[in-house]
Length: 83
Image 1 (cartoon, rainbow, N blue to C red):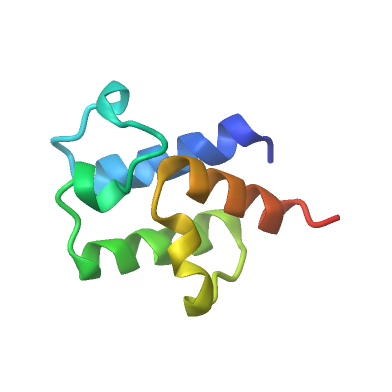
Image 2 (cartoon, rainbow, N blue to C red):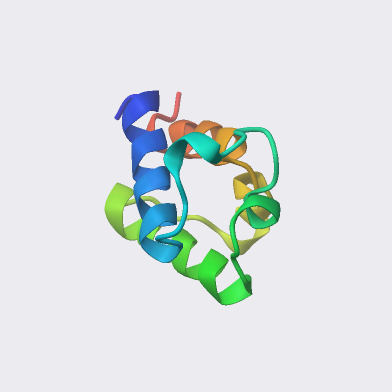
C-alpha cells in the first residue's frame, strides 16, 4: 500500500465512526480526539478496523502513534511496508 491509500483508509474509517466529519476539516498534525468526537471506545474501534482492513497487528503499546492523522499514516506505512 502507498501512503495515499493508507491515509484514505484511516479517513474512511474515521468518517464511518463519525459521519459528521468532513474530510477537509481535519488538521493532520492535531490529535484526532480533539477534532472529532471520539471516545475511547470509538478510538479502539478505529484501531480494530484498521487492523482488519490493512491486515496488520497494532499492539496497545503503539496506540499513541495513531493519535494524529499524520502519525497514524506514518505508523501504518511503516507496519505495512517493513524494511
